[in-house]
Length: 128
Image (cartoon, rainbow, N blue to C red; front, side, top):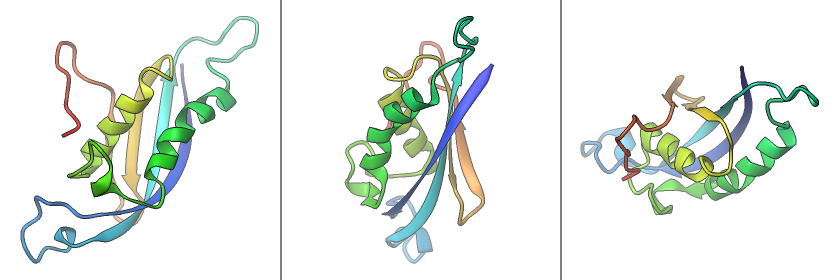
């Protein structure tokens, strides 16, 4: 069974790999939507996979580190693509969220996003 909690954040960035003159090579902002999914079986006594308050508390620090920030200045996000933001979040949450199964980061303004289900077995993907 999967449960999830969503949160939003606003942030600015630019993509260093974008060609000169491309809009992504200049500083611009987005509204980001994040979904953090947890997999598990409901506890027989509580009926919960995880209490949503506990999931929200685990997410709060990561959200605050991103919200209304210039992403390029955050350690590990010098080139803040959707892929790197998603992996950065996974690395921040994997030890705080038991059963972490999936993180989705989407840019509402562009109708695009990234789904990350953790590193492949034996392969650790770097955030940079």
